[in-house]
Amino acid sequence: MKKRKTFLPQVTLALNFIFLLLQLFAMDSFGFGLEFPVLSLVVPLLCLINFIFFVFWTLRLKWPALLFLIAFAWSFESWQLLYQFKSKGIITSKGLHVMSYNVRSFNRFNWLDIEDVPTAIANFVKTTDPDVVCFQEYAKDNAPLFKEFPYQVFLPYVPNGRIGSCVISKYPILNSKKITFEASKNGGMQGDLVWKQDTLRLYNIHFESLRIDSKDTLFSPEYSKKFNTKLERVFELQNKQVAQFETLASTNRFPEILCTDLNNNSFSKSYKSLASARIDAFKQKGKGFGATHQFSFFPLRIDYILTAPNFKIVDFQTHDVVLSDHKPISARLSWR
Image (tube, rainbow, N blue to C red; front, side, top):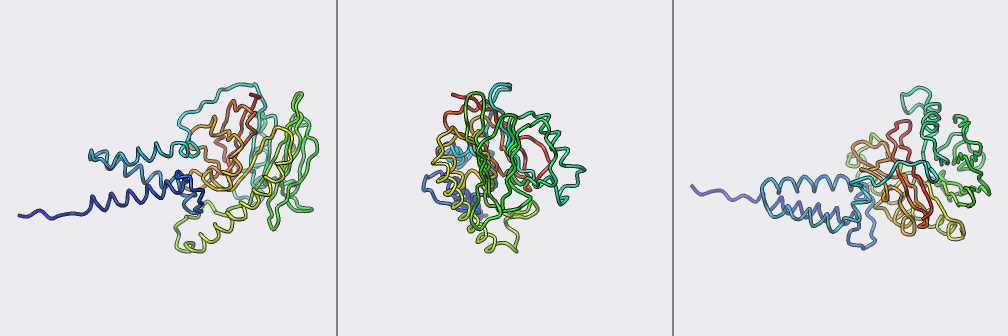
């Protein structure tokens, strides 16, 4: 009896090629500088699909298994933005300990079924013992006192607003100024931190929100074209805000530390603009995916601590604390 010919291997190989190309384009591994909003957000999913293809071919001892390895080697630099295979940090009390945390208004509208979130956050900060904390979405009326920090500056996102940026510090903060973005309810602040004999420029920025709910799925029928269109608009607005911030930062003469809820991942144009002349603390000393946003099934890293090149990143942590829709991050910094 004649054996029926099957095209399953060819179809599987073709799909493997397609998903590998999608992953490489999403990671901008070819260096074209193009931005694909939806693709960039689903990089972890694309990597998972391609890993499954790799396992499929490996178990069958077939040559296409090499495709994943070649793509991995080709885009290894980009992989480090997604996942740190080994933490190179050391536990030490030396250096300036900086934390960034979007506290989502201290659970002002009871998004979390947790009792007394403000006190829980205050206890977490006290236990972690940073020198400086940059808060985003800080609700002034709902905030705890943070008695351990003698220097505290709150600046609302909009005039007379009750939600905005806040920096609390064990060291003096001078020349605080609000940073506003046109046609946006988000914003930030800057201040000069006096640390030992040095003056450091501290930026605390909350860029335009993606407005993706943790229960949403990127492929739900009601989204499709509308979802992609919305993402494109938000990405464009974020890029304009980043350009505005870079213009502001270009006049700075002090060593800078940028704590930000960028509301975008490390494969976005906005991240690349910010990180091009700065050090990403996670990339230097982070571990694992470093996901900072509580989003179903997707390890999204959208919060960052970026520094001037003359800083050395001693340690970095993504804290596994569920008191907001974001996880706090912290880094210990010293001079090179």
